[in-house]
Image: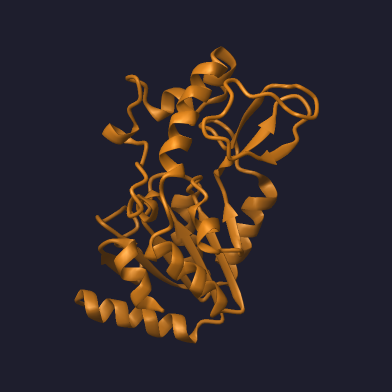
Length: 241
């Protein structure tokens, strides 16, 4: 199946689907110029993301971790949603049952107008108090380092799920419900290597969904899905509307 035929196949499936789920990863935001923060893009002062995005790193040196997150926030603040983000926001309005599940923390889906949205790894524009646990929006760029809670004065941390931390159970339950009931699952711009999101394709497939993958390169799920389209999310997603 060539690319155009694959796009038309997915488009036809979407037009008939009453329930649609979408999983997005770093690939969709890469089209907006957001670095993936993995590999060469992820190096900052010779640190890798895996060295800083952990509870242990924050406990050891919260100032260092916040300096890295401030650098990320400054990068992301200059970016805008691309046609892929905007297409998914429009797609939401075309289906009675729709859930967008994103692994991204950059907030670009919200900026594009998506509302039926689950950010399973958190949001870089939210902070959580380590003392009173209150979660609040914070768009300060630069942010005070280290920032303090306005309610109790406690140390704030990014509202991000770090390496070694579990996903929020109600959030995961919501995702599993969508995967079990959707007729079409789109997997966009994700490597298929990070769990539990890497298991979403086989879960939806086992439940009877038509699963389509859009990614620059093949992934471990490419042989499992019904259709795999290689290309940029910002170019392909608008063609599916």
